[in-house]
Length: 296
Ligand SMILES: Cc1cc2nc3c(=O)[nH]c(=O)nc-3n(C[C@H](O)[C@H](O)[C@H](O)COP(=O)(O)OP(=O)(O)OC[C@H]3O[C@@H](n4cnc5c(N)ncnc54)[C@H](O)[C@@H]3O)c2cc1C
Image (cartoon, rainbow, N blue to C red):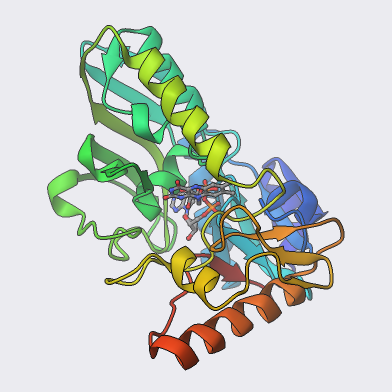
């Protein structure tokens, strides 16, 4: 593997090294990101593709990190942060957003432009790319509902591709792997005219604030199994409020593992393992993680 840092430096890309989890993961705990690049343009994405192909370095596309846990040993691959892939505009009823735009900002922009369709998603901490990749959803709505297309750049092949909604095998909290190895740099949503979108968005946000913890977390640690919500199962085995190290199973919502101060990724895993074991012991249901894990 070629010296990554010198390849990055020679490329002229914006970069950072040894990024702290406090700034890159919603949990605000875990290890460091060794190399981070911040593409802004398609030309930057081509440069990153060149670095990856020349060096063979593994890479991870990081949006807001609200669903990403970095193991305590850190991630030594190349982190491609979407932070600088910005821009929101509306053309008629179509909303076009940069992959790194914050979903709540896009929903607020849509509402202000008299467009409805994103209200229920307006409080989800996510970038646009993260929401498309995860098919993020709430209150019975999901990202796939209004998505028209996603423009992405295939890092391994060095080409840009537009995928229409019909070409993306969306399912519960996933997009079927079609974006693996790719970076979503822009997405378009088909919305409808609405006068009450701003009020509706506010109401959804209020409901979330009333029912979700405020401490740093990654949202739901586990996917909801078919029969019961994971939070209900974890609560029913008596784990609400259970602490380990600097992490705890939230008192407010048992599917949230929160950082109570100095929580490590190991603390998070310890509580995940406990919840999995106890729920399996009681119900013979195997909880599956919803979060993404990187590092060593
Ligand atoms: C307090 C709280 C509440 C939450 N509530 C909800 C909720 O109600 N509903 C819900 O669905 N989720 C919820 N979540 C989880 C999280 O908000 C979503 O999973 C969100 O979509 C993650 O977006 P992100 O940009 O932070 O993604 P990241 O954590 O950065 O990445 C998640 C995955 O998406 C990929 N990815 C990110 N950006 C791109 C891109 N541009 N191109 C290609 N791949 C990309 C990453 O590689 C990774 O595999 C919550 C989280 C928190 C902390």
